[in-house]
Image 1 (cartoon, rainbow, N blue to C red):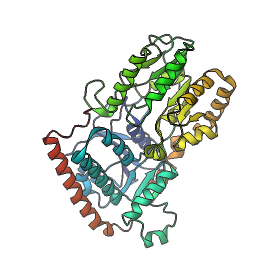
Image 2 (image 1 turned 120 degrees about the vertical axis):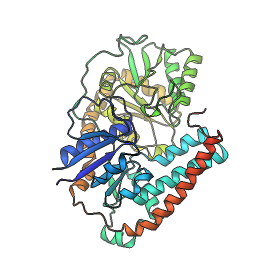
Image 3 (image 1 turned 90 degrees about the vertical axis):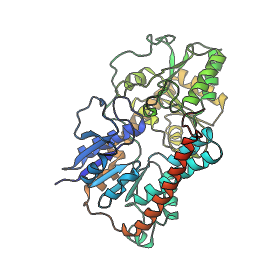
Length: 447
């Protein structure tokens, strides 16, 4: 019997999905193609229509009742978070924790904007304890950048996971930590319909289109970008900024502009209204574009843009939206501070600017709008770079891991006590969170 692999997604997977769902989908696809004889199952919170590709893996919907039995049937379980209620069923499984996103820095950014006092402290403690529990469970931790490797090495060392025995057996720690960044989609984008030029009210065929092709959320610097477009609008009428989607698929069943990133989006819209550029130079799609349909928007755009702050979130981030810009060979404007910004500046794939530098942002937009020779150079480099980040290449270490023997790694017994203590402290934080929610002090989307 071949290796039985479960890719467990905690996020929406389907026609409308964000980067965590896309990553789960692509991991399942690559493992099904590259691990001989493997039986791959993608478990999702609910079944929706999937992208129009022939699937070589099984897709099942799970719930709290069905997931334990599904886990029992596997040899390898891959997840970005293991639900605590399935822990009793994981003792004989090989466990891969997918931490391509540095979740703790994101939680800090979100928490500070929403809560104060005891609620804030409890939220951070809950997520810190959950992360420690996940790292205690994991046999292999996936990371996206060398910076993230150092971050997770520090966490694992502080928890006692890096032992003399482990180090003596594997001094590179390659059996504990593996590089597996976000990847570039298969093939090349193909247009199937016109979506922006001459179609979206206010966007003309001849305009230069800046595309924001991902989530709008707290750690992005929309103010500098909107102000830069406003400045350019006073000297020319051909620069248009389009936000691809405001309604994050993982927000659940909430009203428009009340889900993930709603506060940031509403502030950006208000600023555009105050400056008189909403629906004239800046446009919002109050929806979320289907996975297959994003190619049409990427191919009609001229520049991909993403501006943020030079903080810890940025230092450890791997901006997954950039990979679709590589796929479409779309020159990039971004903020300095993360590893992909270094790639953008060094190749070059576009222009990386200092945070909040509005003058530099205006100049970068002008250059990519008008300097045809530089744009051609960027596109040449983008074409080469995207082959280096194909999913099949990005996931090679995970494929190798799943091809190995299904023997459970050594050292599980030493983790039993830390695991029990971790469950106890996590339960305490969950109890306090439930209490605060009952008292009306905690609401994820309150602003």
